[in-house]
Amino acid sequence: MKSYILIVRGPENFLNFLEDRKGPGKPLSIKVRKKFTEEYQQAMLVFNEWITAQKDEGTISIYSQLSSLQIIYSGEQEIDFELLEVIEGAKVISVIYAQFKDERQASDFARNCPLPNEHYSIEVRSVDNTPFLA
Image (cartoon, rainbow, N blue to C red; front, side):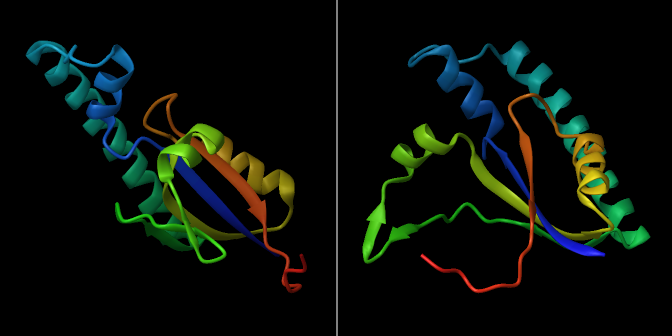
């Protein structure tokens, strides 16, 4: 078995994210907001149930939902998250630690993950226990 870290990225506050994409000063209507909220909550319920089932089956060793606090440093200097978001994409919202027999099994796991919508992504990284060398 090999160790993997799966990184889930997406908008931290999905409805605000949708309004920002629509354009400044153009909020979603109450009806549309309610519809999106219900769809998003249902999708998150499916995602959370799937994650719980994977933990119960022993596929996932650790699942961590990250808080909204995000401070990023490069050396001693703090990096502006707005800039990083443009470079990297969406915010990291959770990290999954799991063991799979090979990359194919890890990829299949990620492909089967019921992410809430197309604005979320899951990245698969194998864990190498050698020290980081710059």
